[in-house]
Image (cartoon, rainbow, N blue to C red; front, side):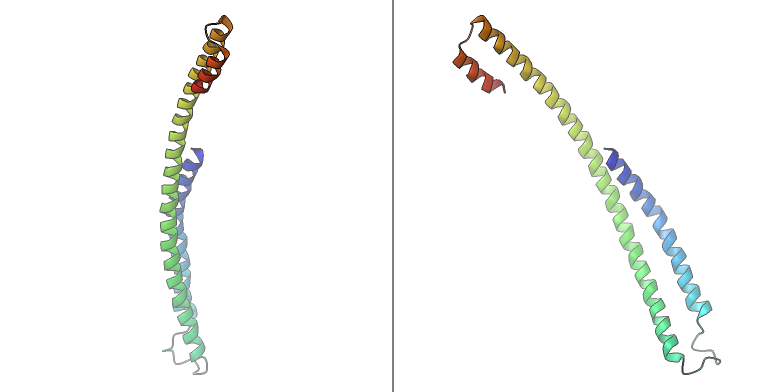
Length: 138
């Protein structure tokens, strides 16, 4: 159950933090694209560098689209983690209830077995009856 709670907390934190990180990286790539690299319209840019600048600009645009995709995947994985955590918590609750029921049932079985042993010792039942009833109790 604790593992489920940790999954829920981790998923919520991931959902809150990842978009901020991706936005900062997007800001960095946008400043790279607009501020650091000269644009094609500048007259000071030599025509020799124009193909390289076009390629770099296209790579920056590709990087931005990849970052948007990573942000979406991270969002979906965060929600999946939260749902898995909820499932783990629910499983823990049901397993604990089931374990409690089994403990109660085994207690009744052991009491029934003790009664059978007492009846055998008193001679109320035969050994064959004891073995048959023992299998029924277990």
